[in-house]
Every structure is written in C-alpha cells, then in structure tokens.
Length: 166
Image: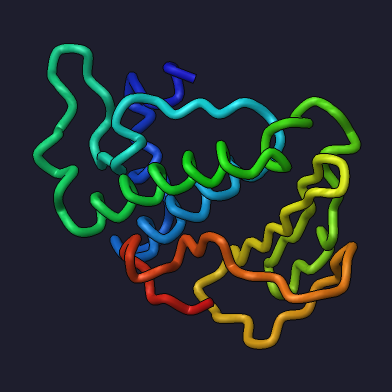
C-alpha cells in the first residue's frame, strides 16, 4: 500500500533488520517470497531497486543509487523474478485456485525454512525459502514427482549481491 512507505513509515529496505548486507538479503528474500506466493504482485515506486529512503512526492526517486552494486542486484532480481514468473505458468495461472498451491513444509521453525508447491495441472514449481543467514546443507523436502530438479532462481546468488550458497 502507498500508505506503508510514506509519512514516517520508511522504505521496505529500511524496515528490515540487520546490517546493510542482511537488509539487502532480506529484501531479496521478501521479493522472492512475494513473486512465488499466490496473489497479484504490487511493488511501490523504488522497491524495484531497493531504495533506502522513504518515498517523497516532492522529490524524484533516487535513481542514482540504482547502479550501486547491492541496489543493482535487487533490480536484476526483480527483472529475473518477472521473467521466471511469466515463463512458468505454475507460478501465476492458478493464483486464485486452491489447486494451484500446496504446502510442502510450513512447520520447520527450528530451521526457519518454508517450502511450497505452485501447480498448474501436471506442471509444478517447488519453492524453498530460507529465512535465516544460515546455509542449510542437504536440506530435504518432499516433492510430488521423483526425478532431478534444477534451481531456476537463487535470490542469494552472487549475481544479485548474495553469497551464492545454493
């Protein structure tokens, strides 16, 4: 909502906890969660490059920071999230249909990991979200069809300003 980023409420990036690296990592996680979870997507002005100051209608967006490495990483992530979202019907075609979503794991609070399935008929996408800065080596999650799965997008990729832990 417009009201959530103006009038003393701060930008999304500025609301997140931690040092600068953690805030950007959390913003990338939040955007990935938003793009892969059911529902239509809404990103307020400046969110696409991780502006740190609150939106002000008296000034233009701080476009000069969009090319800073961490901000450029957020911008690249949003671009790639849009590409993946449009290219994978399972992520959008059944947004308002219960058959389009299934939890794989929502109860792993010790690891702070969520996993879910987005479906469109036989087509599906598995989403894993680690809400901590702790790598989860060999993390196992049940999938609906046996086989090899490939990582399509990693918000912690070095390309987006992360550490490239898969």
